[in-house]
Length: 207
Image 1 (cartoon, rainbow, N blue to C red):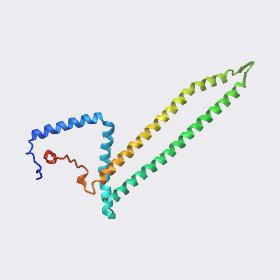
Image 2: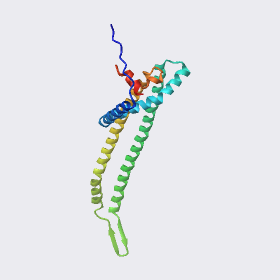
Image 3: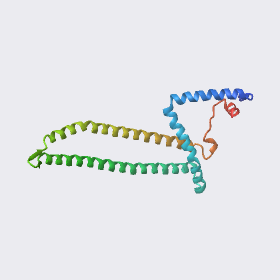
């Protein structure tokens, strides 16, 4: 003989408030402790909430199955993101290449100009002036500029690492939101479906 599920009596407002505050404190503590994971999950829910009506509209217009409609929407989003990344990456690469070429040409031109000045004699009346030790000055400036180029390379490496990390989290958010939308099977009420075995009626009474 199977035991029937027991239903707890109605909760008074004070009990609801106490339980709600306790849950808020627990959620706040979890958010502070695991914010690196919880923030992407919150973003995934927000993305799922925004994409659900688009997938639902596509399903109604095309009569496609729910999974196919969701998959098409996410494929379009991923292709758009990849297109923007390729276009932006090419633009940034071209700009960096142009900057490096400009710096290299400027340094070469500067060295040539200084070399010509080193051999130039300026005569003012009976006095003659000649630039000396300019090559040594250029050598010292080149030595001083080396740490700047190293810092620039380190900065570019940091930017690249941050960009890769951002892309990984972005696709993580998209994948999580994809499964959230897909598992609703077209029912908006299932987007948030918190079911705790044995406490379903209590969760309903808290609402």
